[in-house]
Image 1 (cartoon, rainbow, N blue to C red):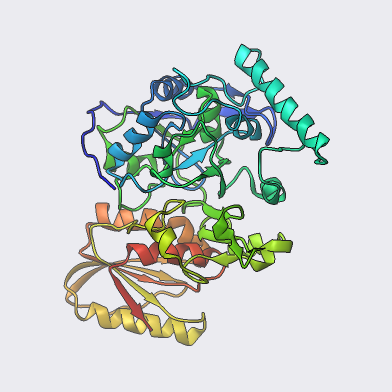
Image 2 (cartoon, rainbow, N blue to C red):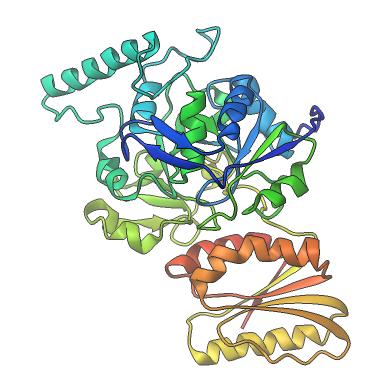
Length: 436
């Protein structure tokens, strides 16, 4: 594991994509699109990404720091730009099922001089014709073996999941295509995490450059994830050439990571899929898929693994994340009764009596009132766990970077539905955990 800080200095440009209207040729299969309005960001992001430089792009979850997933040096530039440990894997983002399938037919990493352009778009280029033949041959071979010829490169356990949740805030653990360099995997393992984002700007950038993009959150490593372009600029100004601004992210927390493929997804030879990182798609949503998903488990809640901790297959498993400069106090209780909430608020009041300076407080539902004559309070109330999940990163950044508080107190929520993801993130951000 290493953290590199040797990074080029850029005059970071921010281009708006807010006025661009995008239309895609198909919801899943193909990534071709048309753009109406100012689309300068399309050509500039394509130019930078094909030159193996990093570009910050919006997704429905958080802003991502994107680079060519087929090139080892491009992957290394992500780690360098963020100051991210090099053994922390990256998620590969695609803009179509065609692009994902195509990865399994590309030469092994190192066997080609340049990345193949227009990957995953059914265009008239020679590469497109060649890939079309390869994909058709794979479908026919699958039928000869008794299959249905549908997406033969993709593990069948994921087919219905993809139809239900892609494009969207769900990352799937897949077999590693030979074209993906080991740097993307954090230097270890035989699987790769793959996501098909639903944000139209993210999907357009991926399709325009014709490359799968490795993209962790576009923040300095360890900081709260960015949900606005301004957050990216605050952390990474001068460390990348381009930020594409499409406004606030819709979901506000990173994607759910699901493993129904690797050895970790089996218990006593029985498929028991696992959520490795909770996120935008809930545990309850996935269980409704039925079958093996009725045995769905959540990492750290239902099981742990020393091997997975040492050699993670996905981000968010090994290192502390999401921390502002101010210390975060997290208050949690079992259950969601009125008594539990009252106990949380009482504990928060007691903490206030021991603090001084300026303190930020985030409550859920009915706020305070809090009494702290010696403390300057910045109070923020959210309606419920869903709103907390949507806003938590932005709130942590606002309290830390704008209000410049000396401490942040957050009322926890029950770990059901959206609460599972938000408590996962808050648990990693907090330096003080108070059980009520």
